[in-house]
Amino acid sequence: MQVLCMTFIDYIYYIKEFEPLIGLLTLIFLGVYVYKTWHIATSTRESVNEMRAQRQQQSTPFVVVFFDFNYSKNFIEIVIKNMGLGLAEMVRVKFNPQLESSLIKNMNEAIWLTDGIGTLPPGSEFRTIFDSTIGRFEKDLALTYTANISYRDNYNDLNLSQTIVLDLSPYKNVIYSKENNIGDLCKIGDTLKGELTNISKSIDNLGKK
Image (tube, rainbow, N blue to C red; front, top):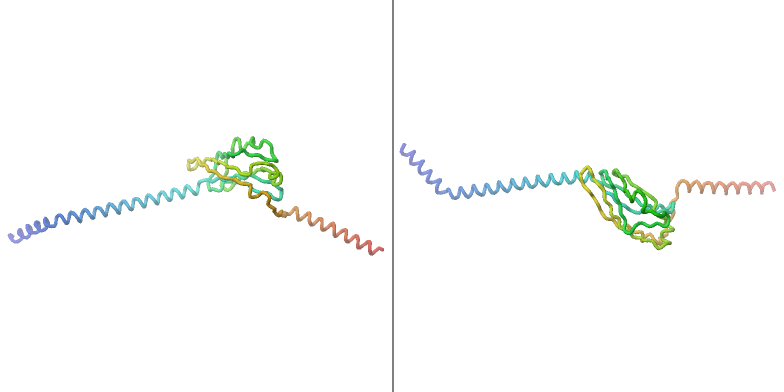
């Protein structure tokens, strides 16, 4: 019994001798544990934020405005298009300087400019004639415009806006080839038919002589 008691007492003293080391090891373990926990929490938070941002991006509208050339009809058109994946509402576009057209008077009084466009679903566009490809460059009219676009994303509760510079100057004095459509081909066919008819009549007249 005495031997057992001495052994236990020796063990207690032995533990006390290593107590500072045990405390240090415990502190290191707690530090590693806290760091790992913080790292996991940070990674989880970043993953959640990335998922939220990706979900928001997949449901956010993105509205742009640009000039489009309709060469077959010699028109320059203004196009406002929602290239995003969400519904754009209360779309407003302001141009600096104000739009001027050789073809359309009082263009800035158009409803789409004064009152805006109510909604633009994903992939849809608003298109209207702006000017003539011929008359535009014959007059001293602005060739560069700054368009400020603002719109509402109700799904994500966001008010969005961006600025786009539209420049017509690269198209000045440019020679382009006209694209033929079905109507043009029909006209060519009618012309050829008429010529063939005339040739046939000429041959018949020669035969009669």
